[in-house]
Amino acid sequence: QVQLVESGGGLVQAGGSLRLSCAVSGRTNNYVMGWFRQAPGKEREFVAAVRWSSSSTYYADSMKGRLTISRDNAKNAVYLQMNSLKPEDTAVYYCAADLHLFGPAPRTWTSYDYWGQGTQVTVSS
Image (cartoon, rainbow, N blue to C red; front, side, top):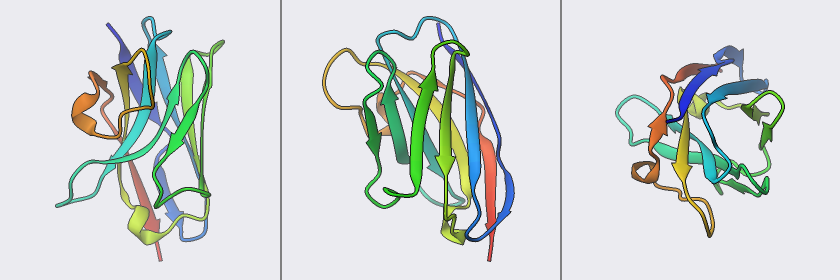
């Protein structure tokens, strides 16, 4: 069983930065940890992922270059640093975990087994 709690969302001006945190409880050695987002009226979309065991990272092409995902073993946490934010980045951001032993991180939200409650990110123009 894995439990996830996000924090760090808020209101930021366009061009600003935010760092989202995901506190993780449970054993995650063979897990991929992902960040997804969902804007009103839109599908939940992949943002970034990191494999816990190797720290291999994966990013959505649309946001590549503006994101850094990382994980901290000591603090049992996953982070998403977002820079140069745009109004279209406004969404609820979710942390997710998928037991995924091999291969690249899944990019479809239905592959993930555990979810946090989400944190709102609002970017003003």
